[in-house]
Image (cartoon, rainbow over the protein chains, first blue to last red):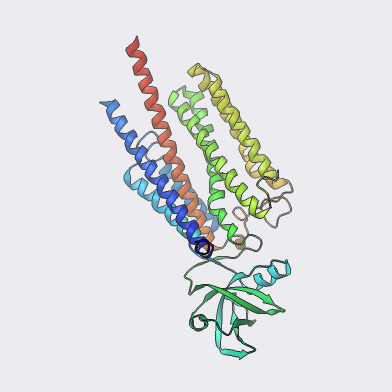
Length: 44
Length: 354
């Protein structure tokens, strides 16, 4: 396991960074949708 | 080319940042554009291998660096010689130099034929006795499509550039946006401008903190400790204190109008110090950070020297500037809309109570 991480450090960092970025994207998209719905409700 | 790319990145970021208006939802195409730009930046920044030259290996050896460094080579199969359980080749390193270097491989190596037939290979190397003779270590990559340049003293740590620098630039942008909307508030007395200004200042502080944390982690591995009180670190610390005082001021004043008026004046005064602490002070004082007084240039990003940043790094950094600007405006828009909804609900609640 240690050898795998040591030999593929660059790809592990890439994978972790992409996962974090994916998480941020999903979170921001979720908030975007919730706020848009709230704005519609308030307008109604 | 560098200036054009960076200006284009900022133009794209600012255009899409303010379009549609900050208080409006970000359309789907807008969000997809942001995701594509930042994802491609992350892949380009972290996927390609770093590859140096034989000169880099020589300089590293003379500096006392013990580990092997990756060198992009092309072996000349016709020069192959086998003796003393070692296979030697003459090789070039894609610098355009006519000097041929000798690369020694262990005779039992299984990937020797692959390296020999490859149009290029990145192999770990260390200098062996004399300057034009090298012992080959592990193979990093065969026929790499793109590579990032090897920077002596920084090596893989140079990749922080694509995250740390845009974060600090976005902090500057956020503080400028906060200042502009603070000025607008003082001129028009519209509470929406106060919401935009305070939201931009909050996000500016978030990006400033992220730049400090990423810089601090980099400092641990490059300078030996997380915090060194380098002029750059000191100036960003002072800047964080200035904006911490801004939020303390906002929290201390209860009256909405008075809070908005006082914090608008403070935001303008605080933003005046930003260029001094980010761009001027660290460049006129001696320090460890790239671009300090006494450094070869004013930092790789702002330096007018073409060789300070290679074309691929310029493209990645431009994508990073555009992507981070868009994500800042996305977060700003969300925060403004949340605060506006809260304000509207409070107003409605107060009206109903009366």
